[in-house]
Each structure stands twice: as C-alpha cells, then as structure tokens.
View 1 (tube, rainbow, N blue to C red):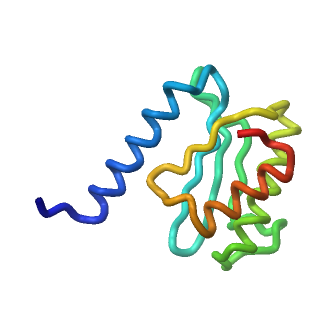
View 2: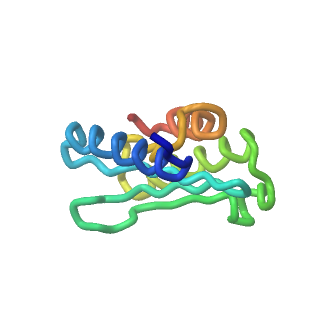
View 3: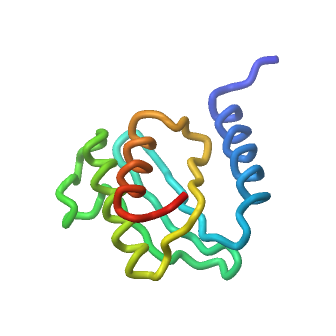
Length: 119
C-alpha cells in the first residue's frame, strides 16, 4: 500500500476535523496552517461561514516576518488570543488540521491558552 505524504496528510486532516465536528457544539474553530516559511491561524465560525479573527507570521506589526520558529508561533498565538477576545470569543476548539501537535503548533496553542482562549 504505497501512499505518499500528501495523501497521508489529507487523511489525517479529515480524521481530525470529523472527530472535532462531533463535539463542536456550535463553537468557533481555531484553524492552524503551517508552511515551511510561515504559520497562520484563523478563528472560523462554521455555522455562518465567516472568519472572526486571524493572525499570521507575515504581519509586520508582530515583528516576526521571515521567521518560522517556535518564538514566532508563540507571538502569533498570543495575537490570535487578543483578537479573539476583541471579537467576543473566549471558547473555541483547536483544529490542528493534519499537522502534529508538536513544536510550532504546540507553541501556538499554549500561547493562545495563556492569552485567555479556552479549548
């Protein structure tokens, strides 16, 4: 059974999202995307199909442009927590997609939790 990395990633992403949808109970989704150069996160309301808040390492005001490390992820996590509070969201569920909960993704989640988001 020869499968490539992309197919395994897509299967892992769908398995994770389908499990989360069962327990979502109308809460917004904190969706993470990690590339080789950047990390971004969105707070999405799936019921209405709108993005409530977003943060990315591409934003100049965060001071991490061109960096993709654990420190940059932590700053992005703190920024999304602050913006979620402004949007009136304090409870959400964490959608890591097909990415493993380790390193940069874990640093982002920990910083968002310290900023006041509950998931």
